[in-house]
Image (cartoon, rainbow, N blue to C red):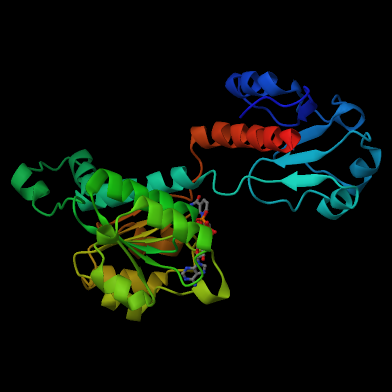
Length: 321
Ligand code: NAD
């Protein structure tokens, strides 16, 4: 971003790495002080960066008259007295969508590993089995020129679509009845008409896709969205990836689908009970065509740094007015 008019006094109330500090110091009179006992942010700050820190109504009363912005690392603002801040004309800014590429990369990883049977072959080799190329390699398929079906074309879905198109020349089908017009616009700019389709029914997308990846929030309308009926509509060769939330895919139906060969595999980062263990999901997590991870979608090292940089950017923009 371009320079801000003056160097505002900004405190960060959680630890950030040196690259974030150096970046922030370009724009701000910046202090990173994660210890609230020591920090003089209430008296001195014009803005504050918070992650899991609380900003209470009592904090708000003590703020200096120069205080203008709270930059929230991540999305949830439930620990912040937003109403009290807004009443004083102070704006709270969060960072939606910043973890999107990390989650999309995990969805891509699960897709690739399942397509080429990587995890299963590795497990067999580790267990002492001699796996030959003809034996171990016979089931693999490529993602090149295949069709990705997205349930939800928001931030994460978009990043995954971009990866599938860019890396594999894949066609992308989006089922998202509530897609925001700004996202529609982004999709139209990203993909040629030959590689993009928006469909009005989930069934249409399920029947046409080689990889179906879920990127919707858990809502009443998305609970059990993928059950027996939907799984039966998928191609027998298709993969199902869920890095969204447990409860969107009916896990009993998914196990049945895998056991009876209605679909070819599942990558699951989101379970209805977490973390996933054999006690709750013995059949599913031990199935040879399943790869499971314990809700690690957004847990990359980069996400923490990138999100902190995004908070700084939001503050810079705000101070520039
Ligand atoms: P987003 O809000 O940008 O996009 C969600 C999309 O879902 C929106 O376009 C919305 O219109 C669409 N949608 C809502 N209801 C729908 C329905 N019934 N059918 C089809 N589409 C519907 O959100 P995002 O950043 O892309 O994140 C998607 C989800 O991923 C989040 O809600 C969260 O549950 C999950 N998530 C998981 C992790 C992880 O660690 N695995 C991390 C971040 C987010």
